[in-house]
Amino acid sequence: MPRQPRPRPDAQAGDAYRFNEQVGHLLRRAYQRHTAIFQQVIPDSQLTVVQFVVLCAVRDAGSCSLSDVVKATAIDQATVRGVIKRLVARRLLSLGHDSHDRRRVLLSLTAGGKALVGEMVPFAQDITEATFAGLNPAERVAIVFLLRKMAGEDLA
Image 1 (spheres, rainbow, N blue to C red):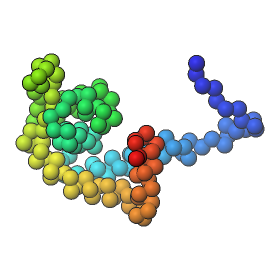
Image 2 (image 1 turned 135 degrees about the horizontal axis):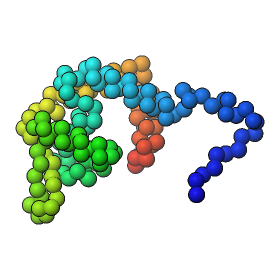
Image 3 (image 1 turned 90 degrees about the vertical axis):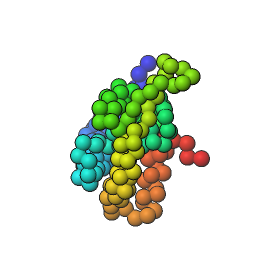
Image 4 (image 1 turned 180 degrees about the horizontal axis):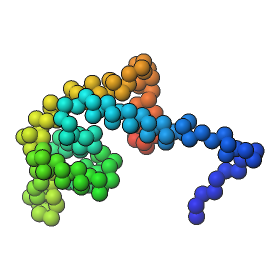
């Protein structure tokens, strides 16, 4: 059963709703800004934020499955499949089979993928700094903590 909206005491409550003050809108705007900074700073014009995240997830996991990448990145499976297809075409990722279960497809970074991630990490750090521009150290810690909490990550 769908949840019903909370009743408002005044009939004009809907008029007080400002979309540009809502968390979803602000998160989307912050992400758009981050993505724009990424595209300006990253020297590989073909590399997207999502592709970089997938490459980093595979780097961190070593040889891993598509579902491992989905879990690590929180990117839906259909999107990840397309990203992987493009990264394989660029010869940054390779596909192989699990030696214990030939049905299971595993992803690995190629030598070119490892080199690209290594080259891009300093730029990614600069992008994070640019995204955080204007925030003091305490605000940076607070926003990361709050975003992780909102995302449902275990903060223990």
